[in-house]
Each structure stands twice: as C-alpha cells, then as structure tokens.
Length: 241
View: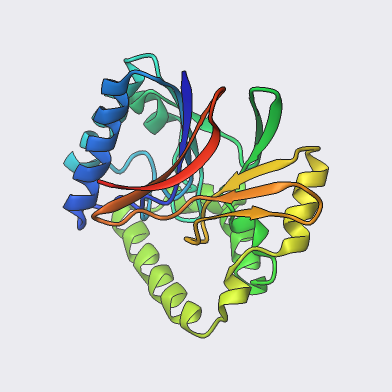
C-alpha cells in the first residue's frame, strides 16, 4: 500500500478545469486501490469562508472526497494560509480528519514532519504578524459571527492587499527561512520534512544530511504529488491532470 501527499490545489468555482482535474485524480486513486492514506497539506481551497458557507461547488468537492474515503483511504486535511477556517463540519461531511500543523507521522522506519510551510517564511515579518492574528481563536470567532456577505467582502479586500504586497517583496522573503527549517527538524527530532506553500517544488538535501521535500501547486493541466511505499520510498513528481 502507498501513502500520497498533495498541497496547494487552490480549488475555487472560477476554475472548473482544475476542479474536474482534482476530481479525476481522486477517482484514479480509488481505481488504483493502493492508497491507504492521502494527506492534503493546506491551501486545498483558494479561500474558505467557514463551514456554514455551502454551495453546489462545495458539495461536489465534499462528495468527491467522501467517495475516496469510502474506499477505505484515510484522508487527512491540514490548514493552509488560505483555508485555515476549514473545520470539523466540513471534514465530517467529506470523510476527512483535520491534521494539526505541524504533525509528525511514520513512513516505514522514518519519522516525517508534515507542514503547510507558511510558518517557515519567518523573514516575511509582515505576513507572520497577520498570520498570528488570523490564527487566534478570538479573531476567528469574531469573523465567523459576521454575515457571509461581510466575510466575502473582507476576503476580497485582504486578497487584493496581499497581491499588491507580494509585488513589492523579494522572492527570498517569500521563501522559507533555512534556520527555521533546521529548527523545526531539530525540535521534532526528524530527518525528513514535507511541505507546500511556496509553489517551488523540489527536493532539498541539507548540509546536515536531512531532506526537505516541497510540493508544487496545481494548475488547470498539471498537479504535484509525493508518493511513498515501502519499496520505492519518497518520490516527488508532476503529472498531467
């Protein structure tokens, strides 16, 4: 049996080709029948307004996940920087389990650290301050008490400001901080890390002999995954949808 890892799909109704490609990916996993677990490491949705926001698109995504879950594939969902309001109601309907960021799992004889990756970008000081606010229980409670229309308006404003801000930031600032990567690996006593967020898929061999795998973001035509099994180990690959 195999374990799969994906991230940064950024599902939204305005990208039907991507949504169909993702649905086909889940169907292919079910048809192969070798997936004991699927880990979705954040930014599954482009934006998430709260579990009480439902529409036909969300229902279709839930149904696609549930169909794979019903084949006895365990699906784990981690928050990203865009969908950190995903909650237990969504996961129950979709047959998923929320996974804390960070989390350590076992792959064969190796312990592996799973993260979304945004918390590693410590040189982006402005973002880290905003992240701390958005992840607080008080802010989330206040936000979810607002009407759906108010939440959507706020999300559009934040997205516009974020896009403008990114144009002014260097690529290095928006990438992970190496010292933070090393700190997390040491803190969790692991030699392997898997994360997404940066949209820079690669396998990094660190000077201390440890390895950092970075998942890529999905487009309308291509996706990225990591597949692990006992014989082949960890394999990062891009594939056509």
